[in-house]
Image (cartoon, rainbow, N blue to C red; front, side):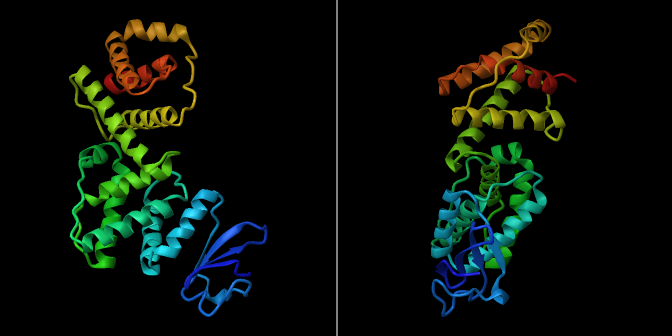
Length: 276
């Protein structure tokens, strides 16, 4: 394996047997080396194959500008996240979470306190991700010997959610706010105590995440598959139907999209969520 480019003393670019660009990491792997030299196999700790070129480029920047110990610690944290999150995560988490934690450590050194107005929303909407975030917070405290509040798990959770979606981080914030607003609309329409540990609640939140992601990415909203079924449900569950119309009115104020094709899917979810 040949060095294609040295990123820092502990990371180099190379290519694998199929010609794919790879990032090879190991303590001192590039010490007294230059491009074209053979990589010492005994010094290899990890090999990253990141097929997305933009993520690959951004991760190379991370390796150039962030200390090796911080990067290694973040990789361990991501391993913990993957062991506790039963959803597929994009490689971009190696970029976004590492960058976030490095900035967090720098901010703590300078006495900067980060506002977390979304804390309650994240704890309620992304419960699995928030619990994984708490594990990462504890790792940060132990590995870097710093004091941070549990609230930091909120930001960690949002980065985990971001790695599940085809969006940028700022759009995850936007989606989170909209999901919370929709949830408030449903609660205002029905006097009930929704089981937030229940399967229907989880499915409803996941549907909203995908729904808003499609809108933000300007992907087509699916069309109704059965007008007859919609009419039947509309007549039988009039209150739920009126609630769905309120949800669509809210979304229409933010996005100029044709949303009629979403009515049936939202209605089914709201019915399941509100019927006992």
